Image (tube, rainbow, N blue to C red; front, side, top):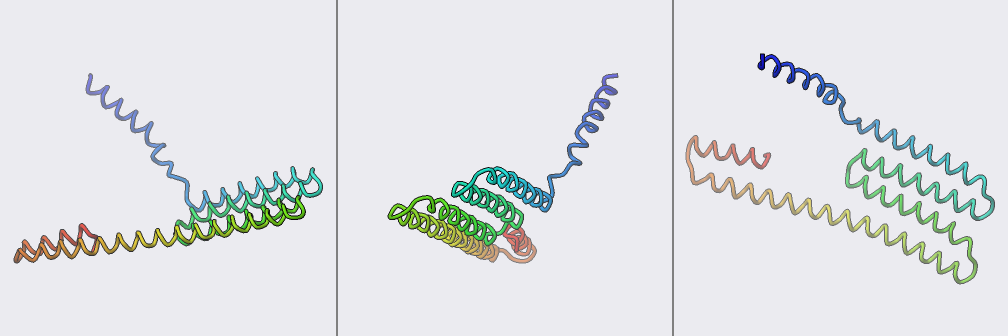
Length: 182
């Protein structure tokens, strides 16, 4: 009788867990499309709020809405493509959108404060672009270094196999190739 209860409990657990396992993670393309749709909906909502305002505050509100849309879309696209190039390009476009927003923000002031504001906006853009490029180069350098280390370790493993002969050597070389995915 106890054995029957155990089988029933295991069966119930499998039935309960089955639908959860059947639901896969959202498709990357679907989540990308959802993020784009969400960005567009947020932009339309913000644009409707901005239309209630007039003058420079309206322009600033629109610039902030555009910058937020660009950020959401670029981050989603970079996550969808999932490449170093895509992430770097996204950071550059986000920096450019933030610069456009800052230029509109600077339009509210006049004289020297405006010049200072514009220079600060330009400096922020240049810094963000430089950071994106530097991060890309450092990641590429780390990847190259890792590949070089793995190649050196593989050569060491093959060299260790030279101490053997026959089938043992073949097995050692095969194990090294498997370990280093060669």
